Length: 196
Picture 1 (cartoon, rainbow, N blue to C red):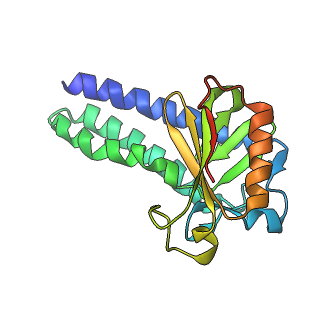
Picture 2 (picture 1 turned 90 degrees about the vertical axis):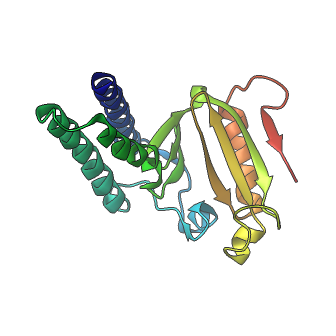
């Protein structure tokens, strides 16, 4: 069981490292949206604050924390393998940190090749569906601020996971819809839903 857990954690660390390096490379691509402070004010990854510009300097704290997290996980994996008397349930403490690591970067942007969301790059061809959900009294983000209360949550689904952002203006919602419809080839009738 310990060997299986070691192998599983090793594969997950390699995958997360690959995705993080891919994000760092894609942050150098031309930014399509948001490009100004006015545009960035209408997009939020979290209801409490607007996203950062997709540059290394604006996201350096998240980049450093994500790098340290990956290095810590690699060190723990090596430590557990070297000192084999440690029980495999220690791995259960390491895995939840990986599944929540996408929250480390407050980032959402459209670049030439796809979307930057959190610590992931999502290529256009990987997007299976997207839809807007109005933020109303029953929505989990309702009540954080006036801007969020009248906004929309953009949900983007891929094959393995989904991501979201909050859009606080109808104009930004229309711009994102236009960009996504242009670049995303979706399957099925319900793949693009804009709920009003």
